[in-house]
Length: 139
Image 1 (cartoon, rainbow, N blue to C red):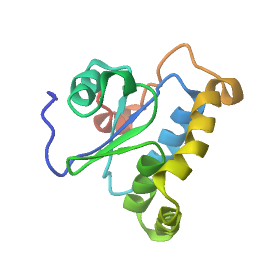
Image 2: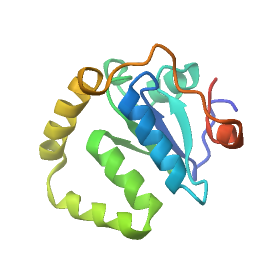
Image 3: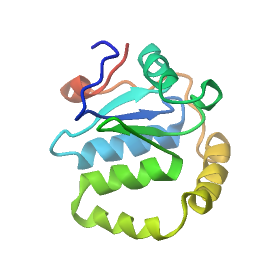
Image 4: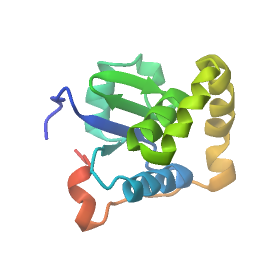
């Protein structure tokens, strides 16, 4: 897969070395029965190429990024939109939008800045099982 992104692509860029982030991705894969999402570690060449066009260079790798239908969601907006796109009971996440992004991102930043301390850091990036490897972009 090149760096060309189709309009309807839904790509989650995550920290593959973060234990909690990898668990979150496994949770999303479990919920994603329709295979809506593709995943890319933020440290991959693919992520660097794609995100360098969408974000300031200093921002790349600092937080989760969700690219959906050519719209970029960052931090808490990304997590909320991912859950909404899963649908069903997770539409309850829409309620969090009553709080401004700046307020939600304060909590997101606290979590993100402490993720290695609280949950650990893996020495290797998560490798997807064969049955779902087509959803992971590892270039």
